[in-house]
Amino acid sequence: MNYSAKQIENAKAKYNAFLVITTVNQHNPIECGYSEAERRCEYHNSIVTSILNGDKELERQWKMFFLKEEVKADAKKANSREKLNANKEASADVLAPIKAIKKIVDFGKWLNNSKNPFRKQHFSKIYTVEAVNAFLATI
Image (tube, rainbow, N blue to C red; front, side):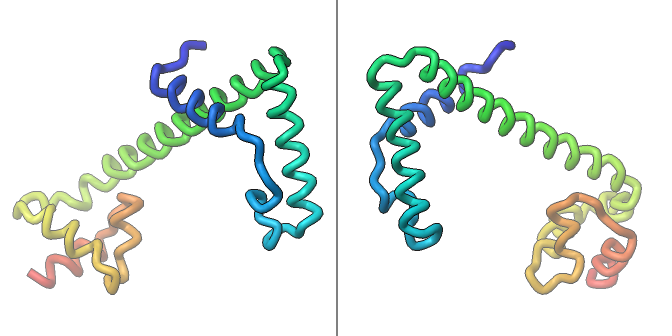
């Protein structure tokens, strides 16, 4: 598999941040309990110590882990972007009256108001006729 330079760069940064000996306090003992935080700390530190002592197989596994996480994150972003674009295309005919009067920017501003009952549509890009009609009534 080919990885982008950005994916490799991000994975390296996260891997290097991972290679730090931690203390119990860094594992939130208040949230998970002191014994659980202590267990997490020992587990993490044993991995880091093994890698720093030259365990190449463990090092490779963790580098691949962080690289795979970057690939997953990029795939999730791409999927989200595709979904929004599909929603925009599906709503194109609903937005036609607003585009015809060249008020699409004003519609976006009107929609993204915290008191607007149709605000959710601004984020999902799935527009309804009711929202369009309510906006047209305000003009």
